[in-house]
Length: 550
Image (cartoon, rainbow, N blue to C red; front, side, top):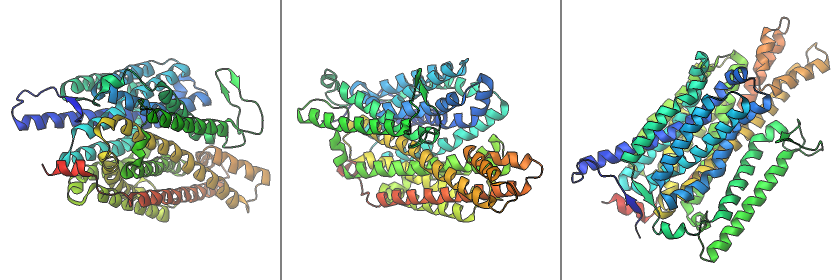
């Protein structure tokens, strides 16, 4: 049975050209919606020092301002993907944009940390509606040769805007008006709502009316809580300790007992149990012929299964690299936020350039080949970055490798989603899109945690080794190495400013370079695993091939 769609007709519905133009303008709306939520995922990190100073945030407040958006976003992707299948994807996009815009206004007007954290959580709710709705609409509406181009644009926006977020944040931080980073979303959101209502088709699964009579509430609850706990544990591992507690933990007036066990493994174990329970519940409901939140049969589709794994690994690499490189530049060179953002700009340029070309290349060579080519470029770029990086390396020295990495990322992100969803029945596009986006978000959280841990551990060890022959007392050496590690390298600027510590400052620069090299090599190894997964991807199934012949 074909997917149910209703498209607001262009002014000349009998002509093919206006219809094509109408659909392409709809692609612009989708791309801008994706850009909005991706930028807000990365912009806050650069703005955080200004926000902390303005609102007087505690360290805990600052951490939650950064992490709560990703946490809520990842937790709700699958339930809202399913909601789009049942209630309409355009409707979900419009509702999500409205929620996101309203939450952005609340963030811009926030007078304290609690208000800002609540607004960021509400932004995550809106974003979790927008993302699967955009993907599911692409998967249902675009076919054949147009499909590769559409996913190329979508993928380049995801990759490029992730890098441009810090650039925008740097510009705003330099100007001092962090509230505008949120306030600007209100007029943008209004334009997106109007554009969606005019240009986007309404798509939903056949028989959605019948399915809505019995919504899988247990599956939705288990999915949200399980993924939320998993992502929360990954994000907070470095803060509270992966096993042994490193600081007190308090939530809603509850103080974690001062024992030898950190709350992080408990939260991760809880997440694993909830996800296991989700699998049991969904299998039971499917066997009984009842609607499910997540159809586990989707994972029997080889490209969907392998594509999700590759997506997670790619995001581990991208977000881990974007986390570490600004720390290196700041610690060694004292680079201001705008200059750090400019050092990352070549990545965005490369992603936009290759993402736009990826669709045409996919139509000639196959989307799976484009993904594999992109992965090779990513691995090569990160390896070369690790081999050439030194304490004297600045933004200009990073630029060639960031450009090469961006070119690979644009090719990979543009077509990996295309390959992953190509064989998924359109009626299940929302579920599949939510799952694929969740894999990306879990990979992003894992990337920052894993690569950040490698960076911090290497930094502490490298500094301790370099201070071993210093004339400083051993306790002073240990304190300097500890402070450098705990500050993620920014303590190096204090050493440069302190008289009589020139040797220690040089040791800090060398340690930062060594730690960054280790983090880059770890990133390359993870991306190589993603390359291995991508080599198992195959050309998309009959649905897309038949459409491409028309």
